[in-house]
Length: 345
Length: 173
Picture (cartoon, chains in turn red, cyan):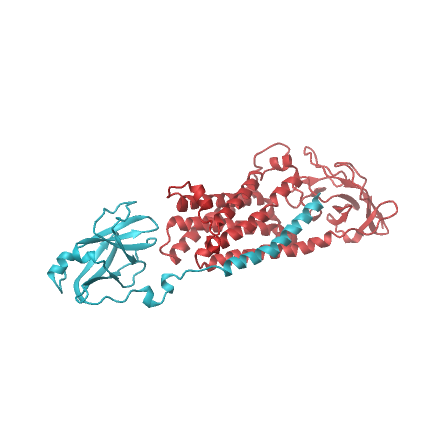
């Protein structure tokens, strides 16, 4: 979080994160190439390296797609989410290197333009093993490029979070294309049990985690109870909210978060202004609502970041009656101060 | 807005969960796998052992690979057969053995001469027999070790069949 533009807000956590990431990638490539030479003595170094890059990108993509639902299921995985964009850009660079070296190795020795050769060389379907799997990889790479190029707060602010998130949701399409790229490409040519298990196992993990996390999320999307005559709706009981934590509810078609702190209650939009992270899954730190994703902070009664920061989110009227919490579904403009409800009795 | 995005996200994941496993299973289950050389029946994988009298027993250096060789002559059919046992695996991508009337200088990027005849694969250290082409009985030639992966000749050694035939059975240079 910064009040001024910086290309990357480096801090200790990011250094550690990126150091582990770089070490992991280099270690994986070394292990993969070494194991390939042991298992397949006739493999060339170029081919082993190309396969290593491809599988490294696939492993990273599987990890990236698993982080979101993992954090929903268990908060201990939240540190992985903090710098997920660096994972994504690294994954794109690995995939791009895989594509580049593959084209040089397998398509640059003929008299045809290597790109034309790569994208048109196997257009003979059926049989299935002649499916143009390179085209699937190419389309996935375009999506990954779009995502990597916009993986920055500049683009997040310029495009606005909803548009930015819509663009980045294309990762699921890219993942599907990559699974088919491997299934119709490398797995057609050889009996690669390890690769089959990697893709199939990754598919089960990614989809399984999403389905489990999605079913939990669905519970939070149930509309709040019936409206009061003055438009307020009951969202929960006071006792349901732990100190310095929040309770989320679906009110007026959007999620809100009611925070309890210092004997008071305040209600804000559940959507962080930075990357639309779930504020209700965060907690109050130093008197501020703190987003669990990237640590953006807001004053609970104002919905605005403490100076000099300028982020603001909508606030809602909240009241307590008979130990129950009621919220007015009509939001105030972002950053509007609302008197907190006092918890009595 | 965020709620709508979440709904879209949910539908995307559900669609993926329905389509992708089935598509992946289809790609794996319907693949046509060509049998590797080690999966072929022995009779197909290895040509039958050569027959006839031994004309020569030599160690040949092909690139960095030393192979034990025996040149056999079937006097009834006048068929020459080369029996090869690499001492070590050539450890090159797709190593192929050729007989050629010419002897090109092994160098990076050197191709196989157009009139060279493919004898077979030289993967591993198994003993195998390669019937030589008829021309080999009429003229001297060379053995070439060619890497299909590297697209280059890795090594060449002369095969003086004329002089060996002239020396007759039992010649062991």
